[in-house]
Image (cartoon, rainbow, N blue to C red; front, top):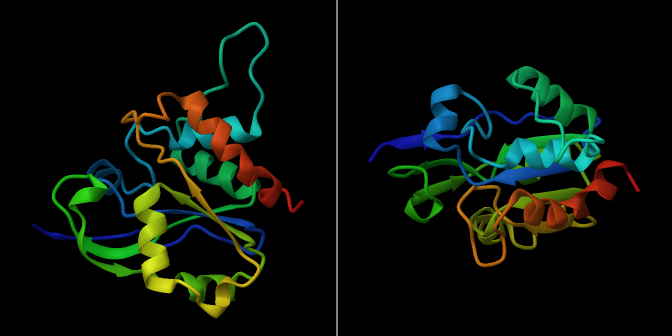
Length: 179
């Protein structure tokens, strides 16, 4: 089992919401992209939060196929991306296989980017790992912590589709808009 490492954060002074995953999947590492697996709902959720359904068509416009454009879209909507885990050992891509995790310095990031008012955790493992590592850290005062359903395409009892996930993920929009 080899050690994997997260990507550097995508963040700037306009960021209001940090979306925190666990660690990059095998496909994400191969592509060198956050949420690089084409079946992951992440980019469809992000675009769905800030776009409207196309009249006369079913659903939302698809995310831009170009990764840099997707990153630009996230930044334009004041979203930052990073992982809770800086490095870990994991066979495959499932969070249940994560061992020996070392957390990223999220308190340091919050200190450097004080405009971030919300951390939206992409799944339970990201949230639980963060709480174990940072619990009641002083940098969290005034920061909303939202445990979101994973954008993994694996269905759960309560999350079967993109629409199910979008309905819950919408709660981060007011934070992104600075409301």
